[in-house]
Picture (spheres, rainbow, N blue to C red):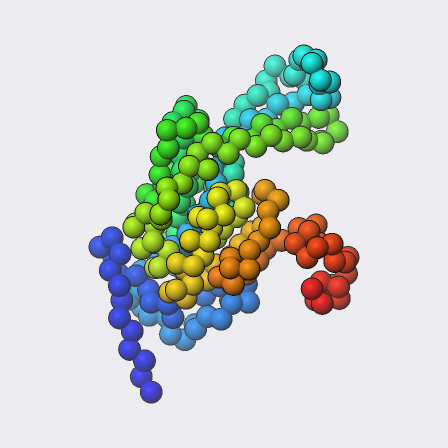
Length: 255
C-alpha cells in the first residue's frame, strides 16, 4: 500500500504533513513515523507560545520589614536578565536544534517599554524566530527577584504584556500551529490562549507539551484532553492531584 501525502504551503515554504513530524518527538514517548520522513520536507518549527519577562534581580541581605527602606547588598545589582518560561523554552530549543531538522519559533507579546527592545535583541541573538510575536501598549512582563545571601529568593510577577493577548488567535499563529512539529505551552499566559492553541493543534494532530510550572492554576479537563504530554515536578503533581502521595515511582505510576 502506498501512502500519498500533500504538502501545504506556509509563508511560501512547503511544510511537512503530520506524518513527517520531528524524530526527536520519540524522545518524549510520542508516536512518530520515522520511516515516512520525506526528503522534500523543510525544517519544522518547534513552536513555543508563552511568556516573555524582563527579570530584575536585586541582591539584598534580607527582606525589608513593612514600612522599612533598606539598601541593596551591592551597587552592581538591579540588572535585567531576559526571562519568562516561554522565552526560556524557545532559547533552549534554538540551542538544541539542528538547522536541517528544526528551528525555534516564539509567539509572545512584547510591551511598549525599554525592556522590549532588549528582550527582542536577546531572542534574535539566540536564533529564536520572533515573526509571530505581537505588541501591546502596556509594559513588558516582569519578574522582580529579591535574592538573599543564602540563595533564598522572593519573586513578584508583573503580568504586563503577557496578559494582553487578543481575543482570537492571529491567522499567522494558527497557520504556524498547524504546520509545527510540536507546540510548547506553560502557565504564564492566559488560560484561554493555552486552550485555544492546544485545541487548534489537536485538530491537525500536532503534539502539544504542557509545562505546568509558573502560576499555580488548575488545569481544566478540556485543556488536558488537548495536550499530548504534561511536564511537572513532584510538588506540581501533588497539587494537581489534590495532595496524593508522589514520593515514590510506584505512587506516581498509580497517579
